[in-house]
Image (tube, rainbow, N blue to C red; front, side, top):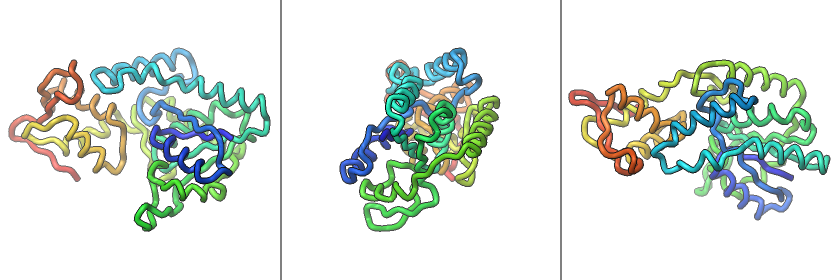
Length: 275
């Protein structure tokens, strides 16, 4: 069995679950790119792959993750999955999806590579199912890593096969998203992925900034804690940098020394509110 997840924190939590339940035994692999943001045009061609890589390089500059661009090669992961299924046709591939745009977009990208091994694939979708948190309360997680390892015992009842018609519907939706110029994708009503313009998060970013100087890292913590529809810190900082270029907000400090030295503020006589 091979398990596929889409966020780094998901890997650790699923490995803990496997330690507690041997029926889940298998390798855990991660699709590392965040397909909820960035260009998708010709994403299955060398030209599209290179264009996306260059876009990420632009965003990762000055970040704590500058080496990440060299660590991400999801196409190799796809090859590994396909080769394993060709070598052992009984191999099960469990793809784990929580109700968020990051997971859903990663899943759409991945499944469109795997048409020839659909019989090997089980989809484990955790949306709309209650889980028990560490305090014993019931909650509906929006990310896999929010689930307690012991709660993964529910996995067998969640795992289902993907029909040909369902695959074709996903491929059609993904093709439309890839053809769009929108650089942001969000999940609406836990059902569909919708494209949004590049400035979609700008209003929320501005609501976390005021005329008093604040450390960039503090602003990021506030944003990531309060945003109902989330995106990654790299994308948020890129939008902050773009707004600084337009003098919508101001930054002080040397970007060359990383995020930790940067202070952000609104121009005088302006203020934001976190809704």
